[in-house]
Image 1: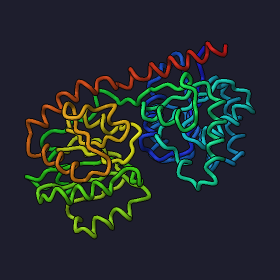
Image 2 (image 1 turned 90 degrees about the horizontal axis):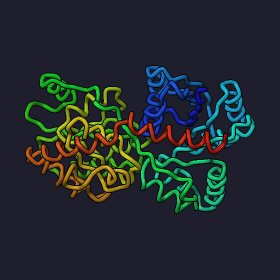
Image 3 (image 1 turned 90 degrees about the vertical axis):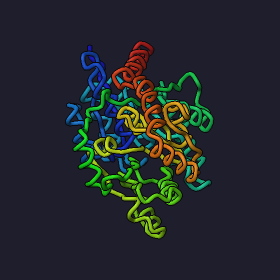
Image 4 (image 1 turned 45 degrees about the horizontal axis):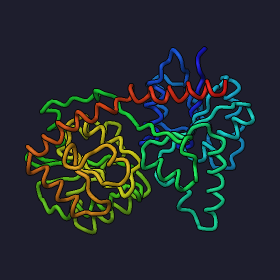
Length: 376
């Protein structure tokens, strides 16, 4: 008998959380598991699921009190004879658990993708209410999967979650990455992005949210003070307008370029001289792994997940969150010292092999099988 799993997620942009979900559902052993994804419509996310031949059902999930969506999820659980509910993010976990109760599905897990979930920033008078909702959800879940030890540590402390119910399963990436640029292709990509012959190029792939630290990257670009260095920021988000205004106010329009969301982000990354992750807080760092796999040296902040991937000075550089000068110094060191960059990238290739998504997914399969046995 196949185990039917319903993944529920309430946002359908296509950044780390959605990519983590996709990595899981496309790599589960399809001789033992069948996955369905319930999500609001999102063009890039739905296209990626379709490409991976994963069944997806559109459910709007407009907020915690969207009980119409909870009823829709209950209907899906019944129709598809779902054995395990797997939730991602707060709204989808709340609605998914209500739907599971209505439909009589008794097995549920959730993946926590953030060090500080969004409810942490609500008004102090509302915080106890949201905290109570999360504690209620935790009691309904059989397991909570965290994408890093940093996430696990903070969730346990904040929500008094029992240690034995909380496991770490890191994100993985496809290895080898299906990206290979010839010298001519690399030059063409760089020229397209404004890095003329002889210039160096630092790349950041990120959702443009406040916690992602792109404002620090702008300060680092200023601190570098190099006319032969261009910074490329691929991604979109709520801070985009403010970040562009900051770059403009510092006279950096020619040195830091915002190119929006790109489906060919790995192609851009493969043409970089340095990858920079400037986040104030980073639960994991899938793009760090991708840069390592492509042989691009990494400068990242010691802000959670990256410090569980990188060893400073061995396979990448870690700098304090918010420290633009330290970031600039490491970027300059890498572009001026090719031998140092090569040593880091050679060591990084050994490390990144531990995050092959086909291996990582076995840990999720084990969790599902334990749950099936536990509630047989």
